[in-house]
Amino acid sequence: MEITKDIKYIGVNDREIDLFEGQFMVENGMAYNSYVILDEKIAVFDTVDKNFGKEWLENLEKALDGKQPDYLIVSHMEPDHSANIKNFADIYKDTKIVASDKAFVMMKQFFGTDFADRRVTVKEGDTISLGKHNLAFYTAPMVHWPEVIVTYDSFDKVLFSADAFGKFGTLDTDEDWACEARRYYFGIVGKYGAQAKALLEKASKLDIKTICALHGPILSENLEYYLNLYKTWTSYGVETDGVVICYTSVYGGTKAAAELLAKELEKGGCPKVAVNDLARCDMAEAVEDAFRYGKIVLATTTYNAEIFPFMRIFVDELLERNFQNKFVGIIENGTWAPMAEKYIKAKFEKSKNITFAENTVHIRSVINDDNRTEIKALAEELLNLQ
Image 1 (cartoon, helix red, strand yellow):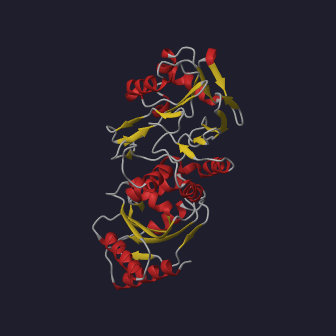
Image 2: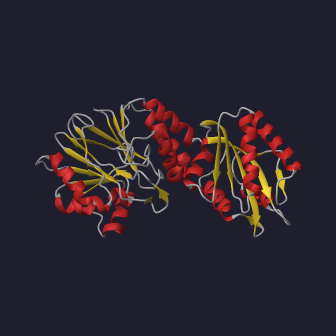
Image 3: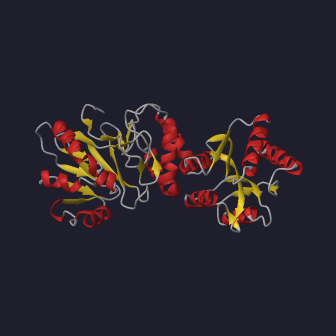
């Protein structure tokens, strides 16, 4: 694939994978992106997953058309991008390897060598000239590993953004970018919002026409749309006006309450109500929704003096990713010693800007008339919240 006259795509599509990083469901597979700039000197950007080394090397050889690469630029050392560094180095023995100092430490761990005889260590603001193409390097620590660098090509105005602006799915998957990019961001990078925001601020000072991430499509049109979404995500802001309801239910009572609340919200004109059964949905989708909307309702039963396991896992997933700036409603269910409200509030004690609804729904086994009144009150509070 030609990105510009001098920049070629040499990555691969993985249609066999079922779980990315061993946890995220990827029905449409994954793209492992790699690029090459052909100039007076030639730079290759990143390798691919170990299972696709042969295909990637064939793509590279075809793009080189008999030439030899001068540089291999390593943006990120996670194995889905770095697994073929040693294979590349064994074939192209004179090529210099460009990376951050921390990346070379990791190469020693992965491959038993840090390529000391051909190593080029770069830091913030360093540059390399390929001829027409001048490459500037920017550090992006914890987006989402500590060694990450991104590269800006001032000639074609391309940002090689490492895992920033990535998404799930192969390159030929026909789907909306935002949904899978959001799930990818909050699932993988979300904990490091401050660091991602710092990278975004660096990028805002560059004249960017194209973004080449390590996963997902090349972005070259309507960049303001993608950048604005990242501004919202990295600041833990509200992307969509609406309410997300996440529930667990053992015998159906809590589910009935969650569904009744959803109906009350819809009847009251709520622009969007998303409902997730945490025992059955893709947990990463529920996490995505929790960060997308400004208002969330957690509905769960007491279980072993805490909360039902799937809700506990979900809350921990949110806390792990620095969940903040949200309005939280609670529906608790307990037959003899309800603890859900107390447990949930305690879990969020150290979170930033969490506001709890004044109206909590207290169910004792099954919904009664008092609960219906409580649910209507909670719905009105959510609807009236500005």
